[in-house]
Length: 86
Image 1 (cartoon, rainbow, N blue to C red):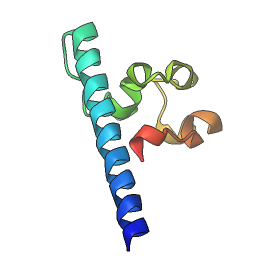
Image 2: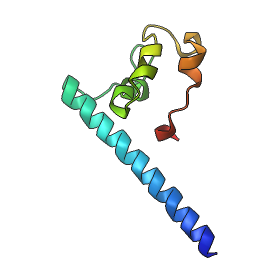
Image 3: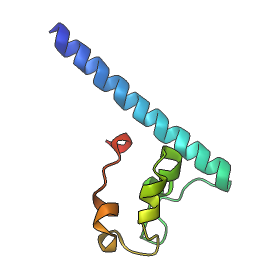
Image 4: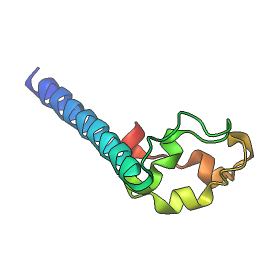
C-alpha cells in the first residue's frame, strides 16, 4: 500500500506539472501575440499545435504545415508524442 501511494503521488505531481507547463505556454503565447490561441484555426490546427514553441517543441511545430488538415500532415508531425499533453 505504501508503494502504491507513492506512485499515485508521483503521478499526480507529474500531471499537475504538465498542466502548469501548458498554462505557462498559453500565457507566453498571449504575451507574444496579444491574443489567446484559437480553439481552431480554419479546421487545420488547434491551440495545442500553436503553443508547441512555448513547450520547447519548436522543431515539431516546424514539421507542421498549418494550411493542411491533420490527416495530410507528415507522419512525423502526426505521430510525435508530446509528453506534456499526456
